[in-house]
Structure formats: structure tokens, C-alpha cells
Image (cartoon, rainbow, N blue to C red; front, side, top):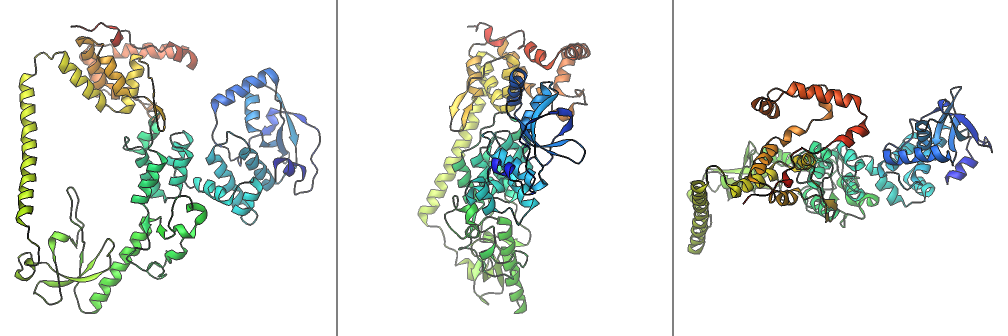
Length: 548
């Protein structure tokens, strides 16, 4: 059903008026049910200018409220732009519509617009389904919108993105391809996927703060999800069809998180039908199987222990109460006094019952360990020697370099330190330093669009600096982090113990006088004048001739 059809034949049977009315803006109210959330301020400003010159060319659609004016059904941007243009009235078509009809019209009108955001579209579909689940299903929405059920379902999943993902998507940091892949995951793994998309950022807060982050490709994201999140039910250690292993989860064969149970959601991304997309639920079933096997051994009079077939790696914290591969040898029941029953707790063989020997000096089972051959021993010695050589070699090189560093530092040393320090301050501080010095941020084309290669650009600037200018650049790099002042700290002042404040004291700078000066100047300026008056520091580093 198109917008025109809904307007012409409302379900309440009331015929719409044929004339357009000029209605005072003060009598028209914004609809809270409008699914459109994102606003393009630039586009709104352009529409405002157009209305100031030509007026509103297309009437908005409103419905009467009970003695309290009218509510917007379609045309919220035209209404906002008319208010910004200081108009008193707006042309509108008044139609008697129910809540369901008004919401359907708003959703369909938004979908038909080219600039609608995918999240707003998803919220509109979700609102319709929540309002009338029997009338609005994936199939009926597919017919009304003229899109495939697969398309509708994919859009609906976008509404399940976490708040951080929605913010990143709205701000254009993620494409709809990234969002579609991540929306299929559980909330916990959505946040992990967001981190994976931006490997140069440690937190979601840092990602959202960066104005120009560079995500990995959708193909790389999908590969990571398949590798780190998806689990094969065909290789599961438990019976995927068992409804009693974890009663709350039920059998995997009918679970909506199984790829084969939800072809509308997973058909284009997962080639196999038996893939679990919820590692947490998978782990719960794995743990339930281990508990079941332990109880079976206990019922048989054994005192089983938990074991893992993995080897603890560097930095790994072993789980309490679990024996790892170096702690035991495979055995048979009764082979030695140290033999005991065990259950494997993880991996493809989780839940497997076996017998182990925990005595590392056991004469029976120590012999079962395969000794290294002479060639293997020689290779290990060779590798260990190569490692020690490299460690000693690098230490000696640094010692010799350290001895030869001149005092005071020369041009070469300053460039080395400046380049290294600039690379370590991070993408955000590099961007602020470029703004501070007024340097041009030319962008390089990449697979995900253009980006600024700040270290490379800064290296070119350093080549033109004098030694004195490089020294000042080092100080600016050291203090670059102090340029960031988040909006939620607007009620606070610069801390006395921060690095910038300490340096102001060191150089005997009248900080209070500067604060008073900028406060008075900014209080008199409009935001537009403020942006125009921003200038780089008076001593541009790149303009100084380089010394010999």
C-alpha cells in the first residue's frame, strides 16, 4: 500500500478533505511516534533557506488532536524548517487517522525518502509490529513496503544493536554492511565486534570520540566473526538435539540462534546450517555436559577431577581446580596408585571420561612420555642460542648508541625523538596538533575512504624545522593530551596538578589573565565568528628555515 492509497482510503472510513489549509505553526505538534531520529543539520538549513525564498512547495500531512491542534503525520522537516524560517503558517492536508494508520503512513513516507537512515527505518518497522503484532508481520511489511522478507528482517535486526553500535552507525563510523554483520550477534559480542572493527582504539568511548576512525573491511569483520564467535554444532561435544541438557535453552535444532533455524537472517553470511551464533549458550551446554559426566563417575564410586587438554600459554591464568596437560599423563584404571578418573572440561572432547596419572615422577607413566630425539634436542638448543644472541646483540647496540648521544642533543636526535613521540601520542592528539599548528590535513585514499596519515605528514613538516622549532614541537607533543576537554566536564576548570597548568607555572604565564581574556572575547562572539577567528599559533614551525 502506498502513501497515496493510505491517505485516500483510511480504515476509519472518513474521507479526507480535498483542499489544503494554511495552519498556524503554533497549532501543530511533533509526533513522538515518528521513527525518524537522525537529523541532518546541513540539509535542514538548506531547506530553511529554500522555504524563506519560495515557501513550502509540498503540503505536510497532519491529523486533528482532541481539541489541541494537530499532530504531524508526514513532513516534520518541512515543519521544523518553517519554524526556523520564522513563518507563521504552513500548508497542510488534514486527515482523520487512527494511531496505527498515522504510524504506518509515517513509516512508509520515511522509507520512500532517499536520505532515511537504516536505523530509523528499522525503528519504524519495529514500532508497527509492536503496535499490532497480528497485522504487521515480516510478510505483511514486505508486501506493503515492496521489499523482500529477507530485507525487512535484516532491517529489524538493526534495532537490536547496542547503544554504542547505534551511535557509531548513526555517525557514519560503520557502514550498513558492518551493522548488518554485527546485528546478528548477541549484545556482549556486538561490543567485542565494535572493538575488532577499530583495532587502533582500545575502548568504545575512544571510537565514538574519533571523528575519522578507519574500520576494517566488512569481509575482514565477517571472517573474524566466523573464526571467533561462530561454533559448529556438528562438532559439539554435547547432543545438540537434547532438550534437557539446559532446559531453559532447549534443543539447538530449533533455537533461533542456530543459522539453519533462521534462514532470513543468516542465509547470506553463513553457508552451513548447523552453526551456533551464541558462544555463551554453547558454553553453558558444554559445562552442563561436564557436570553430568562428573556426577556419573561419582555415582560409580570414583573421585573425578577436571582436566584440560590445553597447555597454559604465557600470561594465561590457569583456572582453579583444573589440571592442564603438563600436570598429568594419560593412564588406564588401576595402572598405578596415582591413577584417578577425570573429565575433560573444554574443547571438542569436553565431557569425555578418562583416567590420568598425576604423579610426574611415576615410573609407569613417565616412560610413556615420548623422549626428544637427538635432532630435536639439537634444534631446540640452536633456537635458544639464536634467541640469546639477538637479545644480547640488541642490548649492546643500545649501549653503544647511548654512549654516542651528544650533549646537547643534535638535529638527528631531535628528529628521532620527535618522530617517535608523535607516533605514540595517538590518532586523536595527532589530529589536535595539526589543528593547533594550522597544518593542512591532506587525505590518502584507502579501502574504507580517505584518511589522514598524520605520522607521514608530520615527518615532512619536521624536515623543514630548525632544531629550536623541533624542541618546541616536542614540548607540544608532550602536552597534546591536555588539549582534549570533553563536554561532560564543562562545569569544571583546569586542574592545578595537570601537566599544562604546571608548565604555565614553570614559564610564569599569567593563566588567570588568559582565562579572563578568552572568556570575555568568546562571550561577545557568535559561534560563526568564533570559528572564523581561530588561528594557528603565531610562530608557525614549518615557516622557519632549517639550519645546517
